Length: 513
Image (tube, rainbow, N blue to C red; front, side, top):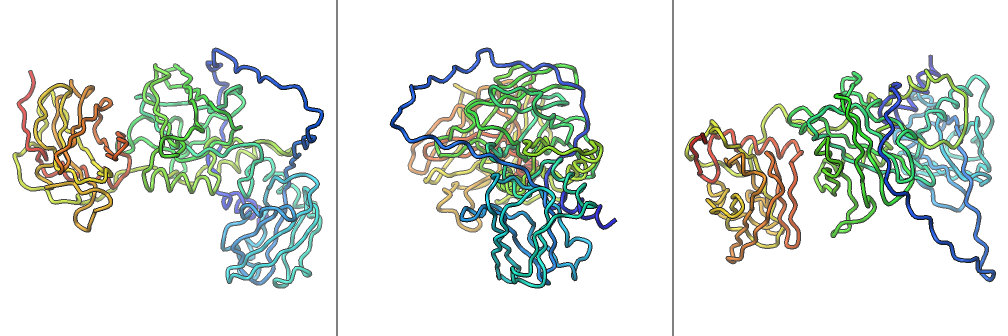
């Protein structure tokens, strides 16, 4: 039983994501209409230095044992004289005398073939030791024994009874340090706003094929461990789930998403220029599917929200949470597929971070003053929960939200604040962001203007994308961002303002029709 517990611990400590259940073969996805042009090669220069051959890498499964008498906080395995890379164990790895059930670990790593290796062990008291172990291969054991003196440590072959566990971690393919040479670990916040349940998602590179990879829905589990058959649409506050995970793929300029829906339809979305930074130097980290019929109605952008997606994606990147459980193959082993699927199932049941509305509402940053009651939204209008962030460098005196070309109406935060201070000037009790609730004609939400008037009397008009409820506006000196809010605290703050039963611009309307 100890051995079974050991292998499951290793897999759980690796903190990868999403178990695999076999899906039906996907439909053949739409491929790019034009193949990329073949590169033009210049004639070889006979005087040029010879090009070094590409490094060959191999997958290695190892058994590790902590018998040092101390707790290990990090362990690095790296070629002599090169960068140490990432730790292959989680911090807090206990010694055998403290935790006899978990002092053994089976790990899988990928390293350049033929290189001599060093091991650096860092203990929880700050002491460290470096051990030159030479070449490493499959089915080898590193036993850290009798304290921190490396002359007591042993490098030997694993016992035959332990080889199946080495095979299993190699077959799963998740490396202990998230190192996959020749591939990118791509963190993505994924949202389904298509109004359809998604039953299949395949992410693949230009020149590749969807069927080369796994359907990420096959690895989708709810926080309670139940298998999900699809990814439902909707904002997180409406019960939808936003995913914060990674894909492992070759580096290319363009990628594709092949998506199938529960009504039998399918579509291929182009994801162009993924590694092209925006004006602030940020790479995209969000893919939001807007339309199940228009492959270009998709939002690919950088989302700067905290904790989501920034903190969640940082954790996914560090831990190697892979959304579709696809890993490149660096070694071949023979393992019962059912064992591999069972191991991935356990990994998949790690809860998925998702923006969910808290049980208790969060109070807004500023008190709502009494106004005309408007608890019931009149027919033909939409109650808009909105958030405004002032990062412009100047204090904002008023903001108006009105249909393009029409009268500007009233200041949308007249009952909340005299001015909205800039981010740099925010002080306690007067933050640079504000939450508002207003009514606007539903039929006109597709063509709205946001007018910003600063205290210096200057004005800027922003023509908006089709306006949705729970939208956040970020106003900077040289940039304007509009996005549907997905931070649970922000959503709760907007709800709390609306709960007061008044429109924050004081506008009331008669039903239309």
